[in-house]
Every structure is written in C-alpha cells, then in structure tokens.
Image (cartoon, rainbow, N blue to C red; front, side, top):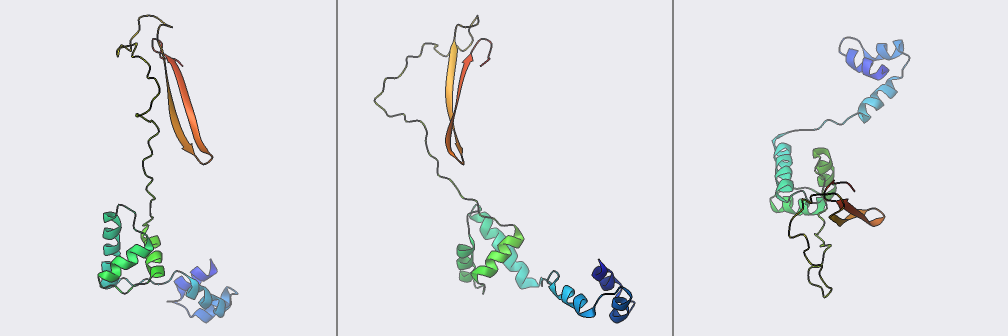
Length: 159
C-alpha cells in the first residue's frame, strides 16, 4: 500500500522524501517496482504473433499444444521457443481440450436373444401398472463407470 502511494506521488515529490515520510526504504520501493508486473511491449510484431496464435488455435479446434504451435509458428517465420509459446498461450487463455474418442456402450451385433416388441410403440397405457419400462445409462466418473437404472410405470410416469 505504501509503495503504491509512493509510486503515485513520485511525479510531485522526490522518492527519497516520500520514503522517509512513510518509513520505507528506497531500495525496497525500487525492488518492489522492479518485481511488479512487467511491461509488455505490444508492437506490431507481437500483435501479429498473438493474432496468429489465436487463429491457429481456433483452426485446430482447441487441440494445438505449445510444441505443435511452436512448429507451425516457426514454419511461418516467427522466431519463438516452446516456453515463450507456452507463456503466451497461458496469457491469451488458450488451453488445450483433450478430445475423447467415442466409445459405444451398446453392442448391436451379438448372438443373444432380443426381446419381442410387445408395445408396438404404444407408450400410452390406459391404466396404472399395465406397462412398466426400464433403461440403463452409463456414467463415467473418476472412480470408473457407474450405472444408472430406471424402472417406470408408463401410465403415471413415476419411477
């Protein structure tokens, strides 16, 4: 808080006098100022690099990591390293999303007997307890697969 005040008032008063009045050392003030957020140069080359990185990332559907991004940028003539690309991707909010391959949970080709279609698509019974239906869905969790099973009376729509 003191250093922010000193920085704000350093245009009107000498830093030495401000530090003495607030009982803060000048070396600590300058060290803090040096450690604070670095000045980011946004010249035309940096802006072009940032725009190009965003376009490449979006074109890859958020799957381009720092290594591949670096390769593509080098192919286009940019002189960048992997860690610089990684830092810029972090600043620009470009985070890779892992695509998970579709895994079918139902096997259509099997040798087991298939149940007869007793309802013939008539899902509106006229009284309770005439038709009950069930289904199972698979939920992938951190602990493995979990199964959610539902059994429902089609008349009252209650489980």
